Image (cartoon, rainbow, N blue to C red):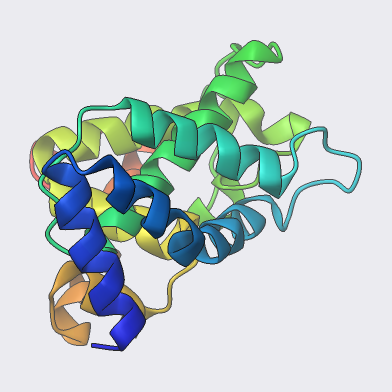
Amino acid sequence: MSPESHDVTRLLVQWSRGDQSALERLTPLVYRELHKLASHYLSRERRDHTLQPTALVHEAYIRLIEADQPDWDSRGHFYAIAARLMRQVLVDYARKHGAAKRAGGVKVAIEEATVVAPDRLAVLLSLDEALTALYAIDPRKSRIIELRYFAGMRADETAKAMNLSVATARRELRMAEAWLHRAISGKGTAREA
C-alpha cells in the first residue's frame, strides 16, 4: 500500500469516527482521483454538455459529506461509494432534463449505457434501475460494475479495491454484465446474479 493510500484510509477511518479535521486533510488527497472519475464518466459525452467534471465532483462530494458515514474499510471502498454517487448525480441529471421516457426494449452494451448523451439518457435510467436491482441481489457484483464502468478502473485496480483476486473480479464482472444485459434488454432477470 502506498503512503498516500495509507493516509487516505487512515483519514477515512478518522472521518467516519466524527473527526471533521480529517475530512479537511482528506479532501486534497482524493480530489484529483475524484476528478479523474468524473472525467471518465463524461469522457464520451457530447462536447457541449452542460455538466462538467468539476461540477460532477462537487455534487458527488457534497452528497458524500452530507450522507451518514459508513465505516470506511479502505480507499477502494471510498472510491466505490464515490462512483455510485456520481452515477446517482448523472441519473438525477437525466431525470431533471426530461429523459423519463423508458428505453423500452432497447438493446445496448453496458459501455454504451454509461454515456450520458441525450439519446442515451433513458438508457442510463434503465441501467440505473438494473444496477439497483443487481445491488439488492448481489452488492459485490454491482460494485464491480460501478468500479469498472463508472470509475474506469482496470481489472487489477477493481480486484484490489474489492479485495479479490483478478480472476474472481473478472468472473464476477462477466456474470454481472450478463445479468445486466438481460435486465436492460427486457429478456428478464434472474433472481440470482
